[in-house]
Image (cartoon, rainbow, N blue to C red; front, side, top):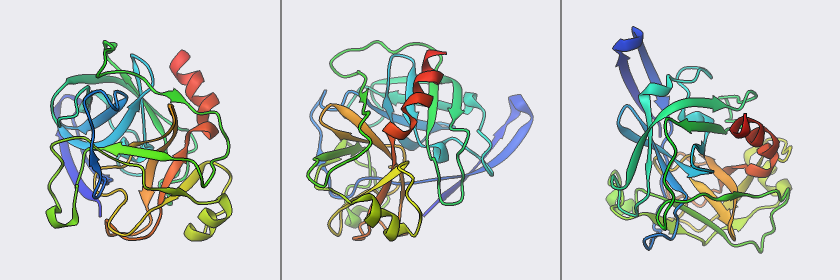
Length: 255
């Protein structure tokens, strides 16, 4: 389900309605302080909209669908902020956004190449609670890989609409083969995405789009979309594959 958020940006003389994605982790586990220092929250007009991952002191990666308004136009950076640095929601740092760079090939229909980079107005101070995650350069994932997904969110179907007070995570996922993933969503797989299957009443839910998927100590994906309209279905979730975009990411963050 999407949420339509209309914002009047007086400073730009711009009125824009943005259909922003939702998604959060169902029936996850509570994270310990410092367990996921790279976890970020993307806020649009002061409202928590999506997740993200800290790449370095100045840059955060998220989904392109989290930062666009109508079509594929990026919303003004001044409307956004990024928070994190705590396992408790709405605590820790909150930093305004300097610039947003979506992947040039992003296509809203079907959420193709769904990735974007957010530059912060000032660098973060790293600590045990705030840190970066390395990018994976692996082009393939195995069904034996332990994938951990984290995010703040709708922690149970019985509490629909209520966000978790504590950061949630789950590692009860299985990587589908590229062939099976492509067949599941009826799309040719060029290596830019992968699917994570999970049990019923698990998986991402509202406001989890952009959240990190990690294998070991490396970022392998960001949540792109869920196949089912309903949270907690047994349908796989789809993630943007980080290794496919590594060259572009390095070009942007080092410019």
